[in-house]
Length: 494
Image (spheres, helix red, strand yellow):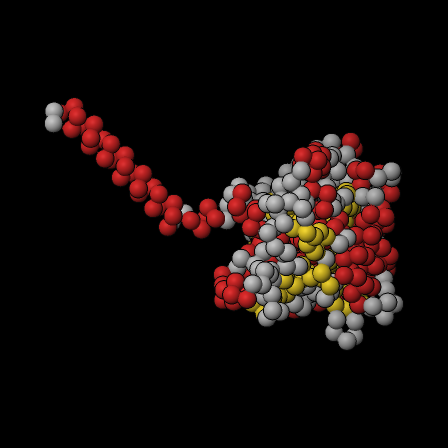
């Protein structure tokens, strides 16, 4: 064999060897990843070849499956009260794939989880179709309805989160405007167009506002500033007058910041009075004296600057809220009143409120209580888990005292409930540089406690962009407090 032919033969041999190596790699190394890839048509066919298991709220399924005439997709996903539960369930679409709980627990819901292998083998022998397992949520159906109805009645873009402070269970998770997963559950061109229209909708119905969107928290953040000031000894007596003048001169700046309540009320007010009337100067001064490191340290103990995971089930629950690094002195002061470059999800502010209501103990939020097999056996069971002792019980109780005073005598009175101990804090957050050109956000956070030990913490966020409302009427107390009240009543009873 001459040299050119020998070289060609060697080259062809190397190509064949590379092909064999690649084929074996795909079969043995990348097999699982390829088998579960969203773009693999066989994955989609298999997902909808049998009825999916259900997502359960309050003992009842809020999802279902319906048989179709399609050769490739034997079943299609259905939902009950889809727009209300979409921020919880997500969607399972033949054409668009899956999201949220439908995505995280797809292997359980579709019946393909490895823990079902023995049952599958048995079903094959007996001729039974494959069956999926169920996802049991922590959602309280009445609380979810109260939150969603409150937002839709306002006609606002917004979010509601309710937590059980003692366990971390997510009791409500509402977002508006929302969407109905049924309208694009199939894979037709019409359903594809519907999904595209939702993506382009200026109201952002596909956005998960409680968990995945961040906003300046405004004056609701003052409860964390108060906790930081008490924890670090900057404030020792919540009833004592402070040195914080009103309007307050920002450090190293010519700007002075006033308060809606007016200088006569807020000038050198005590922290309790400042909480009651939401006086900016006291909290600006507290943050300035604390400094960025101690403010950030306290914020991080409440969960800021890290993603929120429901660790037992390995799923991302909420994106991180940000207490930013390397703040200058004016920027640090502004965070004291929840402004500047500070951002938060509604879930995060619910976590702050819940921790303070729980004597400073921050519990890991979780939305899935249990995973069940097709035979109703328990696959996994979630248990409450402490994330952090964010502040001491003594500090938390002093903040509770101020929040309860604010509910009785201040701006949070619309959340009061007979027979329930209520603490609350309103918030109005400016957005953008030209604040006069942009309508502010409305916030409200609160907790309710009953003598029998039951409790609930709520965060309400309202973006009034689409509302026919004057700028002067936008406040967390006016818009958000009635929603928080209805959610607390749903959990605790009238």
